[in-house]
Length: 440
Image 1 (cartoon, rainbow, N blue to C red):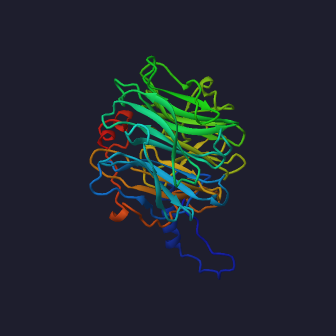
Image 2 (cartoon, rainbow, N blue to C red):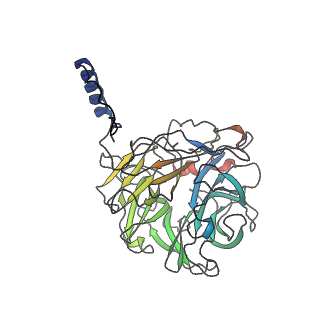
Image 3 (cartoon, helix red, strand yellow):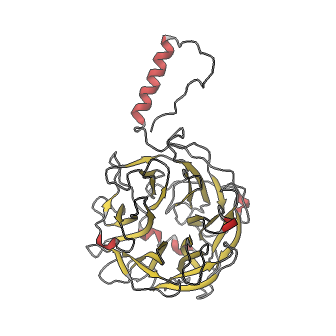
């Protein structure tokens, strides 16, 4: 990236020629910037401070909130353009997934409902997923909103990925089906299921998730499909690697303009570093298992780690732009060559970092909404923060963020809250579902 370029606008009066000492000073400044800044990237953004959607109350267990997700309605008639968001909400009671709505492109947010566990009574505790059906699936018309996540009892003795649906744009929710059932929520002696992610391909609804039920794999990535949202097909492996201690997890999927699909995931035990971000590209979203994964490595040699999220935007050239977020720092990792291995660049952003940040392309095709719920932990209560990054090639600066003002609602009386980056930004899977995950 390069510093912003300045100069006279068209029609401006000519300025006096700088003196020699001033030219020397400018040369020294440019030289210093060249030493500390990477080369210009194809994506740029405009910087403004981040804002807050939700701040946990002072009596909430740490980490307060985490794992935000959002969607933009595109198949809902007059409600198209509405944004919905949810996140893990840590509470002393039974947890739910709160649903927040924005009708002004993310400038303001207000809670409109909650997805409650009406089947098990355990609570919708972890890893929410939101999805709008682009076409009818079974009895559910296009525009139906799906919400899924881990229903887990307070003693962590079981896990269920349950799905709920809303046919009124997120105002009310009805239980639809149990997608997968696992054992205790433990990485070392349990058989849980985690981290659902939805995709529709043709007439099928696909859900990808992390699975610890196979005795031959500490964890693997799998998917199941449904043609009606109620009945689910067999478990199919997407990433199952050796040795058995390896832990691929946290799949997210995006469709490329060439018709292919990309899945990103963290790879516990990867040779490039624990929980390095990997990805696969396939012409069939149900056939990732036949593709060899590859590490995401930027042109400057950096390999991001942990809890990746991938999305695609039409800006940046004929192939658009793949954007990936990871836990290891606040950068975004970009690819304008349909995921080619030697074409990953990165840009800085002032959107707060966090574990499994959510990302949502906005309607203009170049603005990317990024949400963070912080890094977890047992002492800090994190708000849900968001920013909007402009990835268009014509934006002015690659290190910046555009953020709209966000008045606070409901539990947001405490204000925007502050972010304190932990001494170690790497949160392993055991940290993810270990001590801090058990505080809610």
